[in-house]
Image (cartoon, rainbow over all chains, first blue to last red):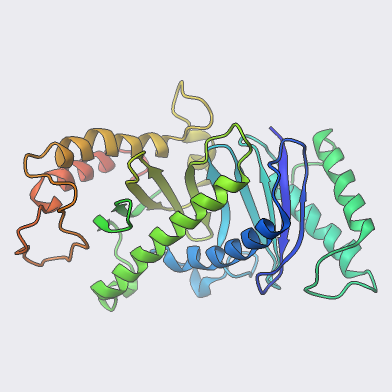
Length: 151
Length: 177
């Protein structure tokens, strides 16, 4: 059990952040990451389109466009949080890891606090912000130590 | 819990079997062509997602794709070694997806949906279709159209008792309705 990767996709499908959260995570090159980000972006939209049932207006309870919320694979579990503005926070973990939703919400908070409030950060551009990186690291440490409360 | 639809694709993406269990509001306006487009979308999505999940899986895990959940429903998927894919759409039900779906005695990674889809393959599909004396793997009537007479002379899955057995099995499941 443990977290593997975190990546953030902007509203037009560009990858703005990718990082591994543990040493168990597979090594993936930057080009491969860009491809994964944009593939995920389109599959997110297709998943809602292909479903025989649809939510009213295609909006979920958060008011964001409906799409992939969770994927279960043989050796990986993927959770996606899409905000109202269309940014997708995606985290992957080994099966059986709990608190994925809480962690995604916390990362969204960190993104608004550390990246969006950085005067040098340009919207939709890759996040190169030391404060955000360090905050995610310390969040992960606290989650592993069991200090983050389940909501 | 409701089962909305079930689709079976061969490894090239042709639809071998399709059935909807719930009629949506648009179903009268949706013609066969639209539904066939939708099935192509589903197969394409499963195909790409399997590759995506495979590249994100750490070394020792199996790269299989089990389920995809959206806000509206969950797609459960089962793929055989020969490339046959069974896709089943159900409602979202958090309890079934986390606790209730664990088959007793099985390890935590196996939900009862995976067990059910595996049963559909090994005990219904293989028994009724593959073992049918008329079965020829490359000569199956594809993209079945409702209420249309099959005059092509190809093997039609509707001529076997696959559909009735599948219905009986699904109806016996606690999550069917």
